[in-house]
Image (cartoon, helix red, strand yellow):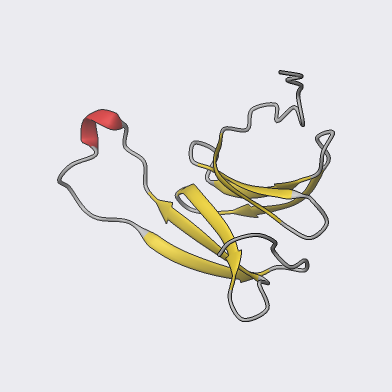
Length: 102
């Protein structure tokens, strides 16, 4: 009930997300090869460009200020098995702490 648009992402394709102390959301974006921090209403606060799709992100570490990015090349559903494994876990220091679990 009471559904609404929190933010219009334009061409964004959110996958895994996490929340920070300022109530901004980080989302992984596979087809656009990036991780984006956005505020309610749609203001983009930060974009981290990658050389592969970002499937998930999470703020963690000792101070919850390490942004963990789970990234891999995306070759489509038909090509998910076999082939070269391209998965990576990348980290970036965030300016705002994460909230919630973990």
